[in-house]
Amino acid sequence: MEHPEMLPAYLRDLRGFFAKFPLNYEVVVVAEKGCAVPPTEGPVRVLQNSKKLGRAASLWRGLQSSQAPFSAITSVDMNTPLGDYFKLLQNLMTEENFELCWGDRYKKKDSPFLKGPHPRQQMEDGFNRILREKFPQGPNDPLSEILLFKKTAIEKLAAEPRKFTGWYLGPQLLGGLRRQQLRVLEIPVFESGQTLPGFSLWRQRWNLFIECAFKTS
Figure 1 (cartoon, rainbow, N blue to C red):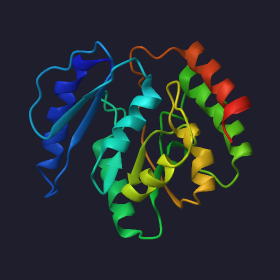
Figure 2: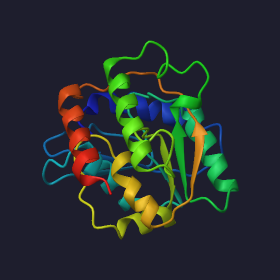
Figure 3: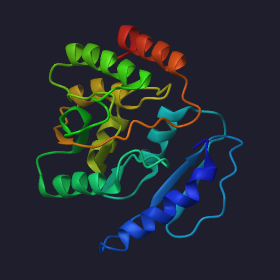
Figure 4: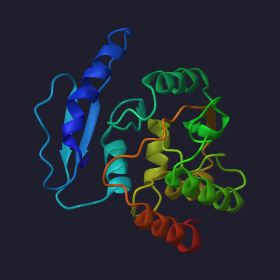
């Protein structure tokens, strides 16, 4: 997390959402070095990075630290409605043969991802095409980070000798999904098209080029 000022509103929305459902949950906040997290209420655990890791590595650190049977990646800007995450959870809880739910923004009706895309969406669509060619058995929307993991999936992926870099976690998991033979359930999800402050289009375009050309395997 690099934008702690957005956390209180996010947690308030989360508490309101889970007040409707009898589910226990915990929020794991991974803060970059030097990022001061404001006081929080509810089941929140803060992990402070001892050095700057970047978004993908921070997300992975949070997932590995989770002790819950199901763990999701969410964003403090509420780019995707909590109802869509709940839909992922419902599907993964009932589908015993799958270990991971992967949101597919292409299959969501009236998705902003497909209508008048922002330069970020145009970039993601281009690299998604490349990643689908490299991983034809992988998810249809590799750069989606609307993901939900079973604990077993995180444990299997943790066995992969991989150092995470850059912004996007999803494409860096594709090789591990294939080698670990993890079954992925793809679910249509909404994404508003908003982009968090601090996202650099040129830097992430370069990072994705390096990932696709040299690292992902």
